[in-house]
Length: 525
Ligand code: NAP
Image (tube, rainbow, N blue to C red; front, side, top):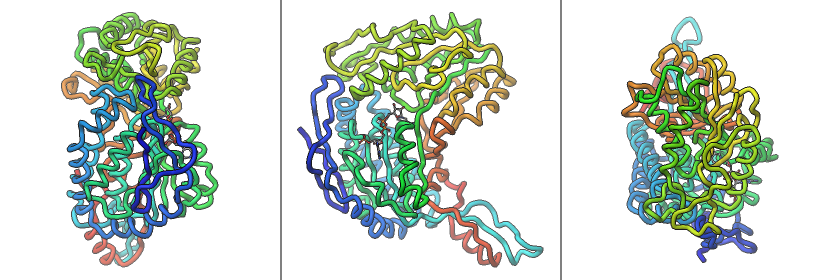
């Protein structure tokens, strides 16, 4: 069995004592173990601050871009090996594993290009000079400079590759060293990808460290220039936010947590319309891809009351084509969930939803597998539920089932549907499908305060639409309320998490010279 080591203070180290086991999600065989007991996290954070930070901050954006490009190339060069690890440990089909691993290399590649376009600057300039007096002698200017601490990245189990990359790329671009901690249960892929990154020789010493296993006392050593970026459950997020060291040192904590993402079908669309077809395609993709274990997967499907019957019939038609089973089999499109605990949680969640909505497809008793032993593995069948009315629902609006599960909910008009969607209390992404401008305007602007991203699917973009579950590095990822209130990615916007915004007041021409030597916050591609 493989022992997953951590990479701290420039050395690969193994913890002692009781190790956590990692399993093959299809066969339940133990495949690796990881422990962090006894590891020196205090020393690792010091190493990052004293060695990695200065090395990275000395480099211009363009030079950091060259590092990111080499990381992207290294991951691409090891693609097949990494895909296999995702298939074994996380239960991904090859296509799902590509979504994770290619997402990682694409994010590094995007930030490489962005950094190149920011040029030889070392800091970002936010906005134009602001006159502070009658003449231009005294003016103000906002700038973002790299924080001098270390970024702690704590990731969820569902994207061992992309989760590591999206946080690492923005931190490196911003000039901040990081310590990344993948979820232990699926760390096999993250561990190998990190090894590949180190072996590439692209990373200056101290800029990247890896924790494989429990977080231990990692957060006890935070200082005021550090940052925490977390993806995972709302429960863990609350613990991190309330950590005494976070509170005492005023450490920023960026959170991506639970989310009850919505697909909304406009009243103008009928079966056969390109935008209706797009709606079905997106819903089925988000329900089935990575067995629904995506923070951006669609959980609630809002449909005009008089179209529910047709939509449910069409969704069942498309879901019936999918095959659940061993991810290594070519015909299989949905693999197992990643861990035993996720299966337990998903089945309990389905039972909760079934108490207020009717299962019309799948469900806990419908297990039918291809190429896999039904007595093993963390399989959950794709499950569609239908509710009678939105107002009577509680769990459907508040409980995220992290698996291939979604509920169709009827609505009457745009004002009612906006109010019902808002009961999710903040989500990462909503997708709206309509060719009716006035419906789009009402719902897009009505839903914007509750969402980090809104995808507008219409006839005009049906051929080029990117499904809502695909996070684009150019655009912000994050959402308000239940979704954690965080923001990641979004080009330079994501980099600002790792930088301090400072208002400068002084002699106008001096500030202008500083502004000229910086890169525009809104610059780049
Ligand atoms: P989790 O249990 O919250 O774990 C997430 C990460 O936090 C893991 O790396 C975990 O490490 C670490 N962690 C746990 N307790 C910690 C502590 N006290 N101090 C420091 N780190 C700690 O979440 P998960 O099991 O990966 O995912 C569960 C749920 O998160 C999902 O069901 C879903 O609802 C949500 N989720 C949301 C998103 C999103 O982007 N919005 C993405 C994925 C998942 P260990 O693995 O070592 O315990």
